[in-house]
Length: 282
Ligand SMILES: Nc1ncnc2c1ncn2[C@@H]1O[C@H](COP(=O)(O)OP(=O)(O)OP(=O)(O)O)[C@@H](O)[C@H]1O
Ligand SMILES: [Mg+2]
Image 1 (tube, protein in one colour):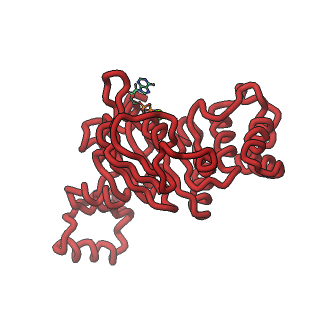
Image 2 (image 1 turned 90 degrees about the vertical axis):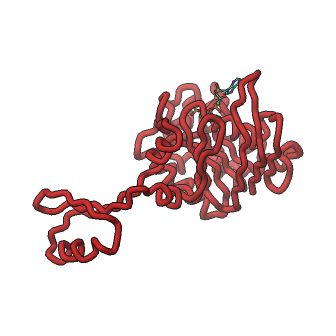
C-alpha cells in the first residue's frame, strides 16, 4: 500500500529526513514514533503529496505519489493540524462541504457527527471548538468517506483519556474494514496498543522498526523475572531454567501477588537508542 525508498528532505540547508525506507501492507496500522521535530509531519506531507522531496521515491496505491490524480486522492483520508477545516463554518457545514466534494450522501454527515460525539456541537463554528472537539471533527471528516489509506498525524495528542479511547476504537474499526492506517504519535502506550508495526524516528532517521512486541523483546537485555509477594517482599530471578522450581513453589504456596518479566517498553528502547525521550520538547 505504501512504499518509501531512500527519501531525503531538506528545508533550506537543513536535512530533516535522511534516507527513509518503509513498506506498509494493506490493512495494517503503522505507527511512526518520534519526539518533536523528528520529521513525522514532514513525512506524512510527503506521503500525501503535499510536499516535494529531493531524493528517493514514494509509491502509494501502486503509483508514484507524484502521479496521483484527483480520483486517487479521494482514496486517502488525511487528518492533520490545520488541514481540511473551514474555521468560520459550523461542524455540520464543514462535513456537508466535504460530502459535496466527495459525493457522499448527506445522511452520512449526521451519522459521522454522532459517531464522534459531536451532535450537540453541530451548529458551532469550527474556530470555537476545543482541541479535542476539533480533532473529533477532523476524524469525522476522514471517516465519513471510505478511504483506503488513512493518515493520522497525532490523532490523540492533548486529548483526555476517554476521547483518546473512543478514537482508538474508531481506528480499530477502520482497520477491521480493511483500511490501512498510518499514524504518528509521541505516545508509546498508544503505539503498543494499536500498531502492527512501528518505526522509531529520530532526527530524520529510522533507528528501529518492527512490531512493538518484537522491538521490546529484542531490547530485553536483563532477562529477569520480578515477583512481588503478599508479604511485601520483591524478588528478582534470572529468566532461566534454574529459577523455575523456586518460582513454581512460591506460586504453589499462593504467595505471589504479581509477576513480571523485565522487557522494556518502547519509551525505554527509544531512550537507549537515542539518549532522548519520545516525549521531550513537549
Ligand atoms: N516548512 C518548513 N520550513 C522549514 N523547516 C521546517 C518546515 N517544516 C518543518 N520544518 C523542520 O523540519 C523538522 C521536522 O519537523 P516536523 O514538523 O516534521 O517534526 P515532527 O516530528 O512532526 O514534530 P512534532 O512532534 O512537534 O509535530 C523540524 O526541525 C522543523 O523545524
Ligand atoms: Mg508533527
